[in-house]
Image (cartoon, rainbow, N blue to C red; front, side, top):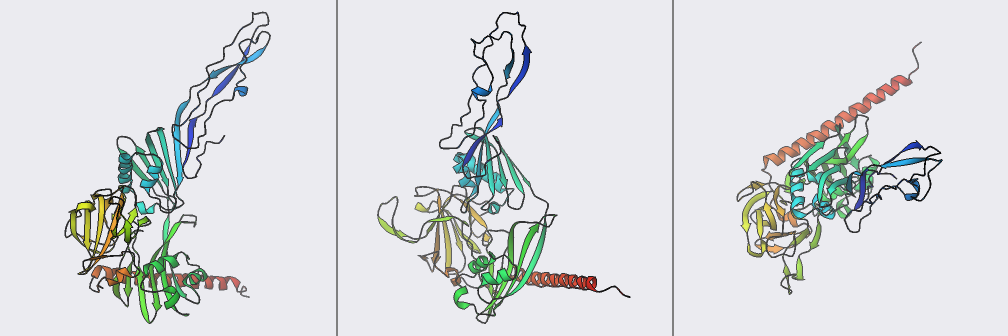
Length: 466
């Protein structure tokens, strides 16, 4: 039976040394009295004390032990005496393939790791690994030497890197990065049908159609505002091994779209959760990121029956389902205007984004270190962690968008277009100029490489001189 881990979600197995039996041939004298050989004690069967899980256990079937019954005469025969070694370090291994919406906290909870230890493990790993690198398709493996306490955790990342955590009184974490080279690639696309087809025709990652569409949501409608012949400039990066194989997901860096007579430019940051900057004709429009990227919305803005008060009242925000300790991020750049407790909200952080727009983040378990009143934050900066403070039935983030002092639907299309533009932010303009230069340089290098390859081909095809 194979002992290799099963990479399926929620699978427990038993690993360790199998029960071993070694046989030594013994020759018995014909004239000696009958001798009896007592069978060794029955071998134990390993059963993991975890409900509703799949378990593989290893023992030696009775028919394969070759142990005669005590009443059987051994005279005039050669038999095998069996030495049974004790089981060695049986371990339980839990494997899971990361699915959309999974977080490290939710996976640890699924593996029955208790809440306090989940938070301890998550915080230790977050110091070494940006948890936004945890993506669907990656493998998380947890080894238990004690059914109630994990001994180690391994995350196999998409780019070939591996994170290993040893869990004892303290959690020690090591990230082993795979050798790789990061390449920048650029394309200049002409839209003939859809952005998706234009990307595919230019051998660019088609998943960027969603990235660009999301960044320009509420600003450009791809179905209504794009025309045949509109041009898109694009830069992205890919990681490659020494053998030239692409690993991990490509990361979009810059896109420029000419539509409706305007130039729309989007600049993405290095961190996956960092909000892209969106510009129209060189002026910043808005910069927005979900407070918990990828989290499930558990309750929307609007009238509902309150789970505690049991009567219909306005739910003045959007709830995001997440486990305690999940990082919460500022939706956009702004200044922290309040940190503290507010009645049923529990622990709250409020961020002012303009003279008319403010966001509120409630029910936190704790605040991010350094977050206090008048702290300047950027879109995607951590401001606190999910909890269940205040009047709640369980851990989640309650998120509000406050416009001119009134709570409005945070998820309404184009909501962030009301944020005042800022053409004076030198850091953001510098990022835009750097992205433009990167596009020009990358495209120029690629065209130079193509020219060199063409000249080499022509030289090879020319007949030798007479």
